[in-house]
Length: 80
Image 1 (cartoon, rainbow, N blue to C red):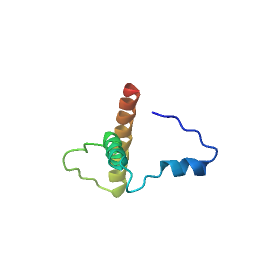
Image 2 (cartoon, rainbow, N blue to C red; image 1 turned 45 degrees about the vertical axis):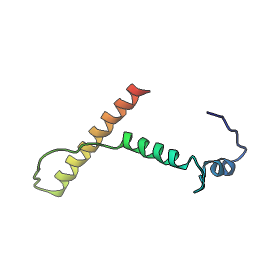
Image 3 (cartoon, one colour; image 1 turned 90 degrees about the vertical axis):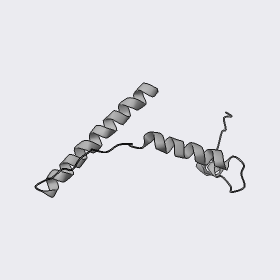
Image 4 (cartoon, helix red, strand yellow; image 1 turned 180 degrees about the vertical axis):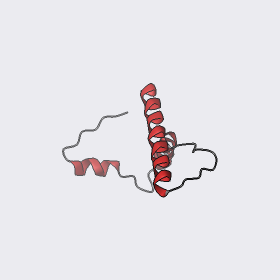
């Protein structure tokens, strides 16, 4: 993979741009989707839960989000 040097952020942003007729575009899109799929949560809590208040429901959701993120972060550390 070549290394490019840029003098400004403007030059760097232009280099990232992909034109519709670029033959590398399908591969770039495919790689982008694969990257997103690796980071996406593939499961959610199972079952039906009842809460007395909206605050309880929000707290449960926040707990699940934090736990899911921590699991994802641990997985990333093992890969890298």
